[in-house]
Image (tube, rainbow, N blue to C red):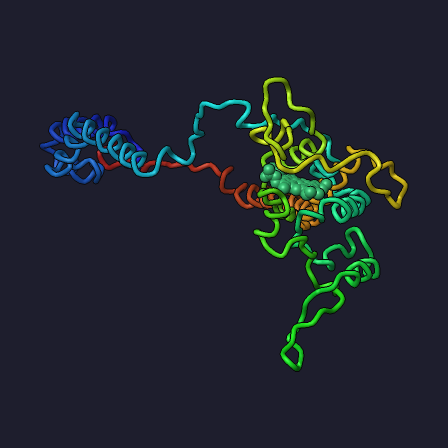
Length: 335
Ligand code: HEC
């Protein structure tokens, strides 16, 4: 209890009890009646004086300021404070608009037809330069393709396996458990093939970029001529959404580039939307299941919460509603 009182209140209570104790000095009963905590011993007084002194206040303030100064000197500003930078549009990139993604809402799953079309765009366009290391053929099963389709696609690709009985490595057709083949054997080859720039792996790109789906859609559809006064080096391309404005990847999507099997017109924006939906699935394969589980959890826990509220009130009802009456005994002196 005492710890909840301010030191000022402590002091007032202290002085009150002292005056009271002098008042009742003659009576021996008063000692027993007084609160144990208000007994005014000299250590308590010294502690009180220490807590209330200006020197302690100044010392604590100096200590805190010193700690903050030392911390910021060692590690820079506090992690929970946003940093303020002098910034310029060109080193930021244009912020992408917000697009109404079909899977954006709390109750929305991926558009799986779009994931399937997006895989086609990835395979026919992006896979020439970008790997997709974390996705295996089996991951497509039940999401965008049937088992047979996925197996047939895997078998079209030759994978190295081995060693065999003679210790030789050999090539074999792909299996469902194989991962998507990468276009380049290593980073050096990828850079050499792209004028020094590294096409990043696309498995987690949606999560790895600020703006996620919106950013990648805006990037793919945002290529344009550089505005007057902006110089773009040879081999670079102007894209206002890319931080800095100059990106090594040229525009890759053009109307009619792929032919969708479901007859959807393959416009630039349609392909961009589909490939971004596919890449979002690749980065968050658990997305649909996660939202479904989340809804179940909310329903379950709110029911349990309501139940526990009811049980609590039910159990406490008699205790909270009781009335305690005290009939003091008449003392012998008749007061
Ligand atoms: C001709 C090769 C090539 C193709 C085809 C290609 N890209 Fe790229 N991509 C690159 C290169 C090179 C970079 C690195 C750009 C840089 O860092 O300047 C890149 C970068 C990216 C980035 C990262 C941008 C960033 O913010 O860092 C994304 C996202 C991307 N590509 C998506 C795609 C998608 C989706 C496709 C298919 C529709 C595709 N790319 C097709 C070469 C390619």
